[in-house]
Image 1 (cartoon, rainbow, N blue to C red):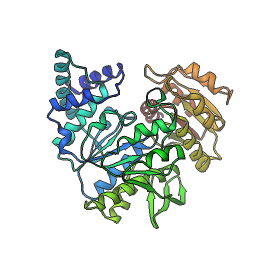
Image 2: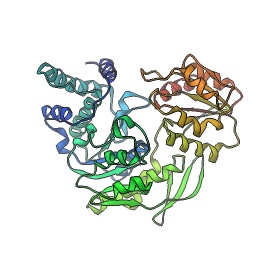
Image 3: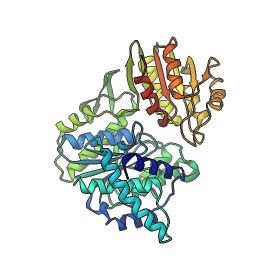
Image 4: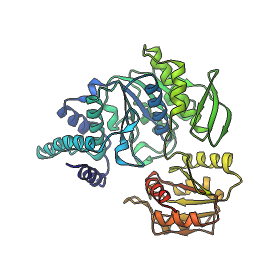
Length: 417
């Protein structure tokens, strides 16, 4: 396959959805020589914050001289960024090469009457091959869905398991209580330390059953502005460039992970922990882009907790600015819960339809938004919405509701005159 063929192949498979189980991915990996068995893993589950946490951890390890593979899902600004080597997306040729290898095994499995691996299972297998062939010292993995039966949970040799903020998401699969969801996530912590921060009692009752639970103490904010945040954690002062007070929790998980690895004998210094987190940038999470006299803020905010974090950041940093929201969501997400947290902050909504079969129609989204801001409208495309917002009387334009709209929004922003 060429690169474009490989991406088309994967995008076509995504239309068939995902499965929740380990048998098929284990069979696929066996056929590929079990590349995962030569790797050491840091495994991350949670509802919100996985991407930021993996970014902090990756940068800490890089600052300490390690070769790091990072598996993220979904990607936001390009397919290749699902597979990172030393923090950078792999090249097109590598995507084509490894997707072709795994696709060939998938075809053989189908020919033998076996279950066909899903798109996510193929991507995970691709990541394992890339990281093995690149002699990675560590592989940082984000769970795709849940934890217990997520494809990533077939890995051995976990050095650390991390669980970020738990809230309601994918309830049809993971369960409709926080206890049930926490049980699914906590299943990634097998024979390794489990690192988290203190959450609600319902969640902590589950986590406290872990054999080696490590709870991060609260990080204390010192100061913050649009350039970043200074905070204190375990009596040490740190700086990060990411906005949002919730990033202090994600960063504390990464710091605790690094200190746990140091306890295990890995060469990780306090100085390089600070350097690593200070260099970390996670695109699409409270990402600011200045265009002439306007500021764009890009953030997924695809569930109520994410929207609550966005709302707090807007109040902290931009309370005095008029705001237009370019907003689009998936039909299987809690749009009412999201709007309950951000609806009152918008001076206008411009709604869009995400380019996915799960995308909620812009007009249906508009009807929801008008309950909060009657001065709202829908747009035919994300590009049209960005242009309309840019021409309006708004110093701040917030793009949110789904990670899937951010790449097209960024392209549209870059094309503005």
